Length: 116
Image (cartoon, rainbow, N blue to C red; front, side, top):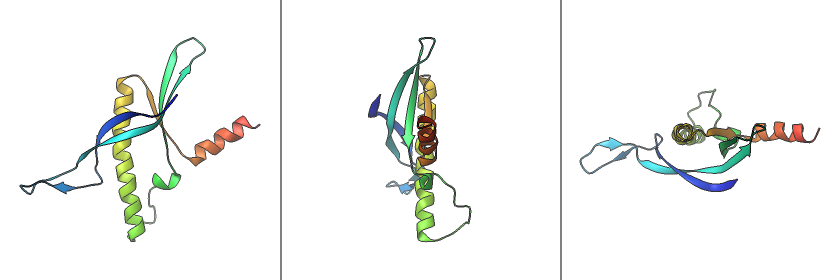
């Protein structure tokens, strides 16, 4: 396994910038995947997983439709995260890897499975 070893360029849909001639655009940035894990399957083949860990609050949709400053900031974070993850999914598929986003909910479920 490795930690923060893979950089992926992505178009940041949460930010709009303006160039000198007044044209707006979304900047290209780099996203760093949290973990890359390679597992050996029972048949001897290897499977690669690119794993992002996030709080459920960073991916949950604002279902109440609030327009508060905090709600708008949270929505910008979600848009930025989804921009990153779309690029990561495409990059992972190109090399036959699996991209996963894991929250505390999945970690809690995994912990329960391990400690049975």
